[in-house]
Image (cartoon, rainbow, N blue to C red):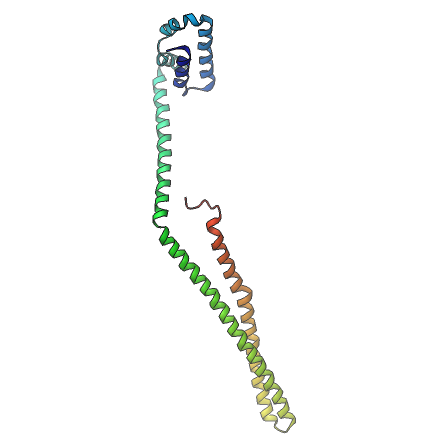
Length: 212
């Protein structure tokens, strides 16, 4: 063993003590070797003993007779930290495996939900178009009946004219109600459904920490 290897092992063995003490110890032994010169390197190593013995002596000076307990506590902390990291890696691997194995199921569910949502939008649009056609028909018939009713009043059939005007006003009232329903469908239901579809399409590409 030469000087470099001795110091390298010693630094590694002192990795669990505060940095300032470790640096001072390494500098002390570096200076010790340099003051003695290269020709005394082997003799100094024999005098000092193994890096393990030197490290134990340094720790004993720092922590007293409890230095072995200090080593045990540090080793235990390192083992616990390693165990936590290993557990996290294992859990992540399990999540990845579960996602991969159940991917067809999730794709099917997502596709079905997307199809239902798109079908709902199409149905709402169809209902709105049907309502629009009915409203237009009611408006046309209502105005016609009102016009015919006034014509009957002025041609000597006031009773028939009033009935026709009443029916026409009734149809116009239904037409106004239909316009309100159509406005609600086009103004609220369909835009909400479209926003939902867009949000669902963007969600897989967003950074929501994904499932993993």
